[in-house]
Length: 305
Image (cartoon, rainbow, N blue to C red):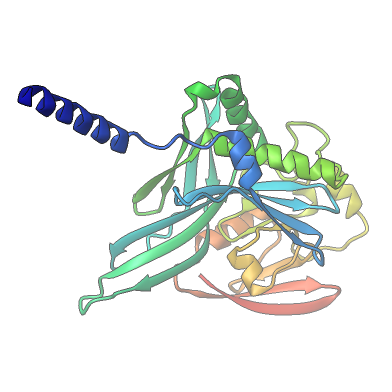
């Protein structure tokens, strides 16, 4: 009798351990959709829709322009690490579905250091973001919705110039849920989604973006025809700023969509290629003077890279 009690007790113990080790069920896309936060800026006619999760240091968010119907998707990720300097991740690499892959410049949104010792070793925190094309996210959501039981994580990797890297992920359910919430927001507010002329023709040709700084810009010859036609009567001294990434360094110094950016770090800017080269040559910790034309007036600012 005593042995049977011991065995029964052990079985109960093992069952308890198994129960304790069993992870909580992962949220579904519907749960991510319901928990997504919507923050509207009436003055700017812009809305941020986020799928933040306390379980993960990364999450997906969408920025919706109610006037134009343009939507951009950004992956936010936080990196914390010990060291003597910031790693400043520059490029994100990620899959796009059906065996494809893509990369995107990384924008440093904020950074901080604390608990530094006498040798200069600190605990660093680096919040970054990178844009992902909607088509790539739709492909992930499609795979998830086809078989939710087989859901996996959408993984990405950040790299810097020194070869340091950091891996992150988003649950496929989170991507599907955020897209569904964006679709619902557009429908509820009667917002017509912006679409370029063709699926293959974005506003700018690939790589003609300065997203490491936080803008998209180009001269007339580099713009897609619909945009170039709209600016036919506009005289540009430099490049036309099409978009400014929310939370980016460009936004923090005061650059606005519609600016004519013509000087960066003392160098004249007349094309997207020149701007990309100028951004790439700006060293970390360097103050960079910038000049733009806005409404015919010169506006000067300084960006701290």
